[in-house]
Image (cartoon, one colour):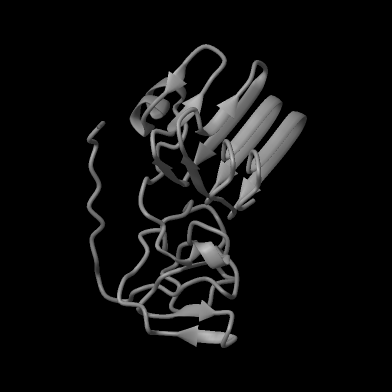
Length: 193
């Protein structure tokens, strides 16, 4: 869900629901809100912006199981609101719930989110919907390429696909951004600012 006037995804008393390879970005309130029931979130880009806005908002009886996502908070937004506490940062969310232990908090490097193009930038090749083909004009590479759950399928991605699914809307799909073939390192930090 993108540019929704309220929550990106909302669940009320859902028995079991999964959000896989999705994007919840630039919504009016929370990226995901659940009021009772179970929601699994994997390989998804989640964004929240603004005071009293959250990536995850859980009411009493709601359960979220999440990992291998990209969570971006800006303009005083927080990671999670639980029935009895608020997790202002990703590390606090991880410590209090054991969720998102393998998730990232990086700029997803969308081609043009404002115009609805959520393909990930890749110098090796990313799909251009206007040209209906892959282009190699990007000078940056999204850190979400090959960062998804290792247990998720990736055979739908065209080569070179890195042998691992991308996080985001086109993971395990023919329009997935392509992987670098040379070695590279992604620096991570445990700073809790």
